[in-house]
Structures are given as structure tokens and as C-alpha cells.
Length: 255
Image 1 (tube, rainbow, N blue to C red):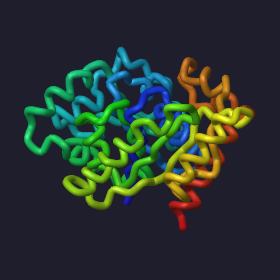
Image 2: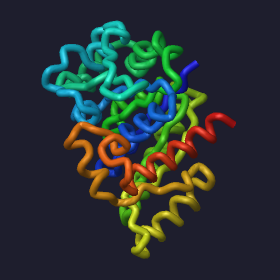
Image 3: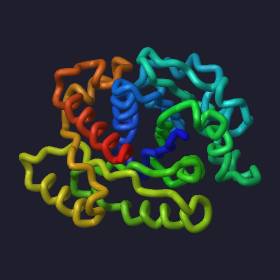
Image 4: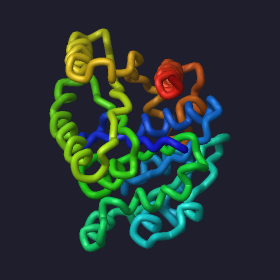
């Protein structure tokens, strides 16, 4: 049975979508069959993987709100073993529409359940909020991977996210686990990044990946070309670090 993992942090600009794209691509490159689900109305995952979001006819909105079969939403990307359920502007109104639907928190789980066994991992990119789209993602998932930016306000809001995870476990998904904590946008030449990393490791312990993602111009450039970093510039430090994080991830999941 495929494992479903949400990548989430309600704080924007922490490398959430970048990590969703690049971890998915690295997993696919290592031979795992991956479905990447874009649950963010901004659809940056969709465009970042090389798909034109303005020409998409069926998106995650259609599966979530209209009950369209997930198999009809899945696109093969340009990369071997990597598949995508895209997002587009239609998802913008889904938060409001979900409030009027029964069992609203379980719609994504219902959508992805029929294809779960077709993939090794299903990676869900959540919007930067704790609204109904994120709740749907957490309810559908086995675990959550949390990117945290190595800057001053990094831990601001993390407490709220942990409280939300506790509420989800209590009311919607008792088996939801923390997959891991990924430090992003690090610059260990500065004391600030070192201090934030120490604080995150103190708070989350061995849930924090040993590998951190540095600030890297190639990582920043790659979405503009619709390519994961391992296909945009394999020799960059960004590609090296995402491959290392993925190796950690696989080692933990294969033990």
C-alpha cells in the first residue's frame, strides 16, 4: 500500500512547494513510483513541474468537489516514475464550497484512496494555511513533512501547527505521524541559522533530518524552467542536498 505524505507549513515562503517538487522528483529518480498532488490554489507545484496550469481541464478541484475519478486527473510528467494531479484557479473557491458539503474533511481521502495502491508514495503539497484544504490533506495522509526556514520567525506558528496536528489526530486521523522536519534556506555561515537549527532540533529531536537545504540560486531558478533541481542542474549543491534528504527519507521508510 502506498504511503501518503502531506508537506505542510501554514507559514508561506519556507520552501514547501520547492521541497514537494524536489523530494518527489528525487524519489522518482531513485525508482519509486510517485504521485504528486497539488492542493494549493496558487498551483506553483503544477507550473514548477512543467505543466501549463492555464490549459488544464481537470484538476484536484474536480476530484475534491465534483467527485471526478482520480485516474482521470493524473498526468504523466516529463520525468520517469513521476505523476501529477494538477491544480488550477478553480481550487480557489474550494474552501468556501467545502463548508457546505457533508464529511467535508474526508473528500481528499475519498479521492486518492482508489489509486493508493498504484504508487509507492503520494506526496501532497498543501496551501500555506490551516484551512479545509490542508485539513483534507492531513486527514488523507499517513504522515506530515514540515519544512522550516532557518530564519528568525521560523518557529513562530510551528506551535499552532503542532496543535492542529493534535486536533486532527483526536478528531479525524488518529494515526497521523510526523514524517520529518526539514530545515530549509539555511546559511550556516551565520549564527542565526545555527541558532534556529539548534532550536528546531531541541524541539523536534530526531524527527529533524540530518541534511539541511541551503540557500541556492539554482534551486530558486529551476521552477521558472518547469524542472526539478535534479533535472535542471544535477551538479548544484541544491540537487546534492535534496538527493541526500531523499536518501534519509528512504532509509527511514525501509527500516
